[in-house]
Amino acid sequence: MISEQSLQYDLGTIEEATTNFSSENKIGEGGFGNSFMWSKIAVKRLSKGSGQGLLEFKNEVLLLAKLQHRNLVRLLGFCLNAEEKILIYEYVANHSLDFFLFG
Image (cartoon, rainbow, N blue to C red; front, side, top):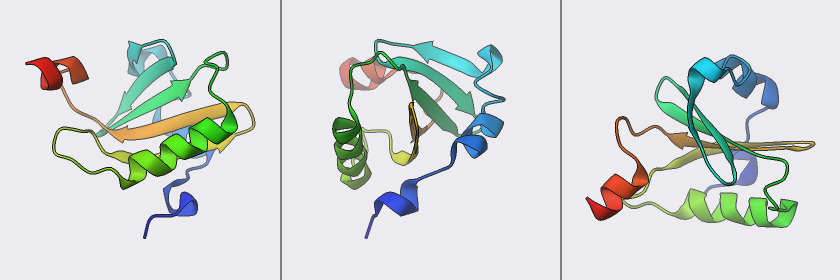
């Protein structure tokens, strides 16, 4: 059984893993925020102006945690701390999602 608490990480742990969201660890930038890599994980830090509210974020976390498919990266965790909304995924090297979807 997957619960919110079993997937939640504190902000300090994520900051340490990404060297405080260092540009050296940045692997991407999109409409909802920036992505960072550390070891075998990808950390997506949602921008404060993304427009995604707390309820939408929590629903996304619970939905993604339950989804498991060989063509989808796995959600490993999240962080919700004051203004910060962060998603932690498994890292897929050398390819974007477009590559896996459209070849």
